[in-house]
Image (cartoon, rainbow, N blue to C red; front, side):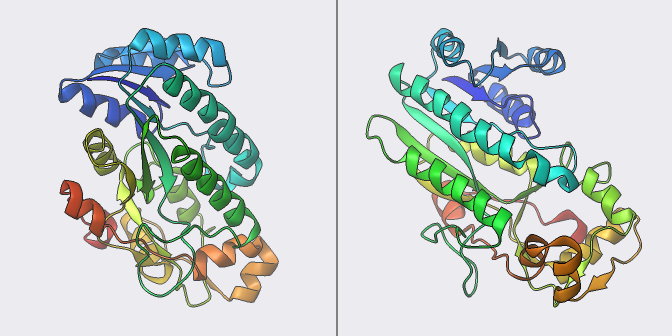
Length: 302
């Protein structure tokens, strides 16, 4: 199968491209950087050097790839989550405007299927784990709500057309090589410096997925029925459990504990939301439909 991957040199892009090639697909990876192009070529992918904002150039690249499936993993995330506030608008623009160019090209050129990166950790608050019918938290704290609205718009756009099969993959928080949550990652550095605290009761539930498991599930999604899938592991964890365990795993001291009022004053509404109100996601559908079998959350088993 001919597959075009946008965001191919990112954290999920590289293991995804490697897995697609291992399965025998002909892959074109899109990147703008020299390092990304070198890495993709070394994996055996064709390389498309084009910006998502260059609509004509992007359409040429998709046409040359003869893509049957287009995978949108476009992000503009910073090196550290501490810088996310400054990066948020550029990330949103890339996903919506750049991704819009990509989807338009895929539709015009007759691609059969479009896979869209979405979020499994901004579900609307409620009891228990949310399934794929649950809406996104578009009325949450300011930055969480803005991100949720972006993902909601991406999912709505994906299902608005009947001429292409849409699959939205609601990934959990990525961890593993190349991500923030890895011993060499930016979040580990923040935790080692004592800059990440358990907020209030620490009851906000985070859903996770190892980056390699996310890549495997995305490769499986080339052939699953269209729709929305939660690509998360079996260990949705409250902050009060995962953060101390992560700290131990990366050689950090126990994280500080602060009240919700202290977090609100020091870091704002979003810090309180992440610490106390995030809702976990159920992966039952992905398990049932395509046999998703994620590994245990690594630092809970360390």
